[in-house]
Length: 355
Ligand SMILES: Nc1nc2c(ncn2[C@@H]2O[C@H](COP(=O)(O)OP(=O)(O)OP(=O)(O)O)[C@@H](O)[C@H]2O)c(=O)[nH]1
Ligand SMILES: [Mg+2]
Ligand SMILES: [Zn+2]
Image: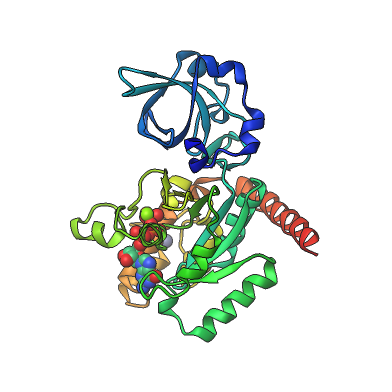
């Protein structure tokens, strides 16, 4: 069956309502655009919309189709358009809480089997941020695997130390690899079992799309080096897309930070920019944005050359993007407490399971 090549297995079969098949076909959502979708049935990929009923009865973002969803649909106009009538029950769902007061979810992808959490072995490497990704993935009933990219940038013994450090935290698979030298690539390929769906998550610029292109064996998708030439924004991949590899492996490339909001930045920010964070504590205004304020200790250090222009710009950019930064002190405090608890309980449960 064509659908099996896209990951339709006995689990979804068991959720299927045979009566519906008189009227509907089954396909998988491969991309979500502003107000339409792309669906794939193993034979062709076309644009789809949802029925008005689905749109108006939806009570939360959870009710809308997302990338990786299976759905019942009808084809129209010589199979150039599909209308999605219903979403299949989900085997797993990767989602995050959107920043802000209201607890809302943003769906990242559905029906994933494994999630690659990617951090690069440069400034991006950050244990606290890794913890946050682990919490998100673990909560979603998806197996996490940590991939440390750009291994060409760090001596082998330092990579070993980092892997050991992660293993102290959690007992899960950690692999280092390089898109440049292709080191570790074979080990990654061995993890890609046919019929399974994977996703690539991690900050912008860690090499997710470069890895995907390497696995595909061709430069199908845009990576940052391409983008840099025309100077457009920093986030290269702008929307999630389900991609099928030769061997019936499905991969979803999840864009970096911006789409994921900044849940991975806030505590990482202080760690990554420790020296600037320390200076920020000395600014005259406690909510200083370090861009023009009088009495800004960061700007002063910049002027004196104590911190570099590029590092300053990175910091300001990440700081601005951080929704955390816009919360009140009380909200921050409560969030930290909750998050701390959540990480602890998830990691403890994980340890127990692995013990
Ligand atoms: N040295 C080194 N550079 C790499 C490696 N992998 C990727 N890069 C570079 O890192 C930059 C970002 O790579 P992308 O694949 O576009 O990153 P991404 O994670 O897809 O980023 P977003 O799409 O913005 O989320 C590019 O300039 C790549 O050439 C690697 O293994 N080693
Ligand atoms: Mg990308
Ligand atoms: Zn300041």
